[in-house]
Image 1 (cartoon, rainbow, N blue to C red):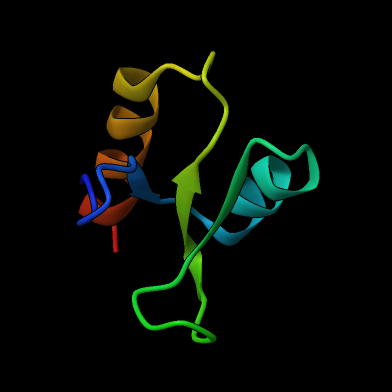
Image 2: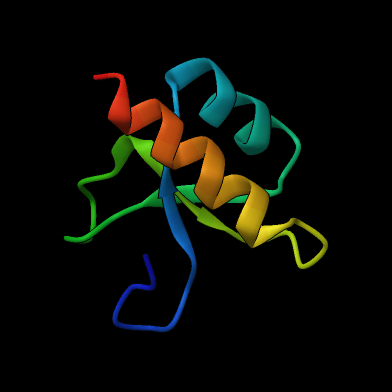
Amino acid sequence: MLDSKGRFVVKLPRTRADYFLARGQAIHFEPVPGRPMKEWLVVTDVKASWLALAREAYQYVANL
């Protein structure tokens, strides 16, 4: 999804989210300041493929 600031946000498995966070390619999505959502990320890496991440996120939530 795109948030109200136009940023690309995805929900990924916790281990995958941690991977992007550790590499500085994403930050936690905080719909309310100070309340980060652990599996939800704002993708900050300009080289990241939004399409690939959207597909990965879709597969993840489809299997919940």
